[in-house]
Amino acid sequence: MGEASSSQETEWLNQAQAGDLRAFDQLVLLHQQTVFAVAVRMLGDPEEAKDVAQDAFVRAWRSLAAFRREAKLSTWLVSITMNLCRNRRRWWARRRRVIVASLDDPVRPDEESAGRQAADPAPTPDAVAQHRERQRAAADALQHLEPSERSVIVLRDIQGYTYEEIAHISGCRVGTVKSRLSRARARLHGLLKEPR
Amino acid sequence: MPCLDYRRWLSPYIDKQLPPEQRRELDAHLAGCAGCRDELASLQGMLSTLQTLEAPAAPELLAGIHAKLQPAPARRRVPFLWPGLALAAATALVVLAVAVPKTVQQGPMQVASWKQEEYAAAPQPLEQAARGVAERESLNRAQGRSDEAASTPPLALEQPLASASRASGFLADRSTQEPAVTAGAPAMRMEADQSLVQNAAVSSVVEAKAVAAPAAAASANAQRPTATVLQVQWQSLDAPAARHQVGEWVEARHGFSVATDERHLSIHLPASEIPAFLQQFASNAAALPPVDPGSPLWVTVSLELVPAP
Image (cartoon, rainbow over all chains, first blue to last red; front, top):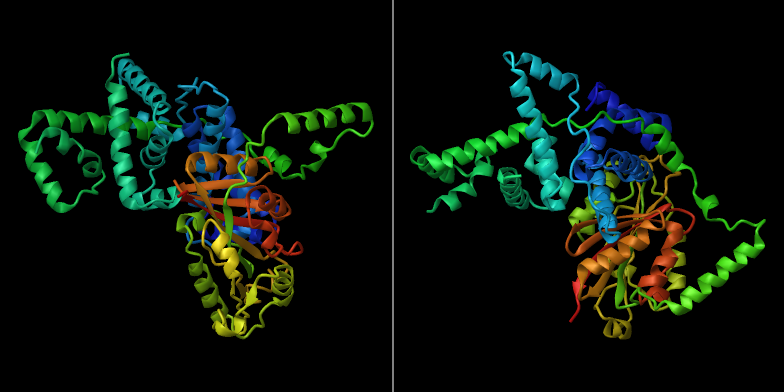
């Protein structure tokens, strides 16, 4: 979540549910990075991810009256996004689109990750290059997983959601999340160990 | 136990999701197995890398969102100034309609129940999909809300239900046999004509329920649309294909669908598209009460795919 406090978010949500589009815009600004990050990791294509992220907010706006706050707004938005990503990839599959296997620019460290790197005890240029290479390979391999496997990795290992939140987003049981995640990690691990 | 089996535990072990007994067993194994220790370290390394993956910064989204929120019909209009082209296009469509076999199976999809909830919050499609067909929970919640706001009068419900009854000749009003769902709120349960049930591919009960809203939810929400939920069962030998078929149809009409498991689909459609949806898919469409066109903007269709016999 962004900089706004929880109470501020609640106020915007109240106003948006009463039909105030400007308040909804604030919610978009608050959650757009999360929604876009999920979309870009699921689809591997920033342009497609932008389109899906916009669609997710459009659909959220249209069904905002239905949002009963049983989950966090961000969780609900991610849930919509994941479903749109899944539909988008099916659409690609039907049209035999070659799914882009890696991002042109998979790693664009923001200030936070730059800060983390700065905090490391003087990483050598070689170490930085190796880390970048591992990130590129991981982002690449992620696109080779089955959608259900990719989604649990994205939600758990990249976005940091709990098992319970992932179960809510995915509409399945916690036990399913656990087994699916275990399988997905093993597959990804195997892909990364394969000689390239 | 072989190492391969222990390695299946590594993922929940890392997330501290392994039951204590298995955790102790794995700890003991790791203490004596260098191969599994290496595997664990390698897996942890991979997860650390994933955690440092950063997505590109989100681009500007608001302008596109606002553009997409604009009404779309203009894009579909046939250009009036080009009657020749319009005629040619119409002719081509007719030819296509004749030449291409209809791919949509009109098969035994049955609307199993119809519900209209007259309170401010429409059912949330994603949550509802996750709950499957457990619609009664939402009724219970609505009841709770109604209790909280018992001092406020319920919204008028007669019109939608009355029109529903009129339009569905086979429906028998059994409201007197049913307890009210909420205090002061009419509840109506209608059961399908026995002959129709026998003929239906899926034996189903058709029910229409209404839940009065606490007007409190109210003061700000009195003009809010009601929520309409259609519960639909569809027999299919090929559930993924059926989901696909419906999903594609819905997407083309600015709706969206959410598959929560292999056999359940939550569909969110503009109310104006519901008649076309029913005509396209449901075999008992003619027998259904109409969706009140005045109130709900969006209708949730909860679709359950049942195996064909």
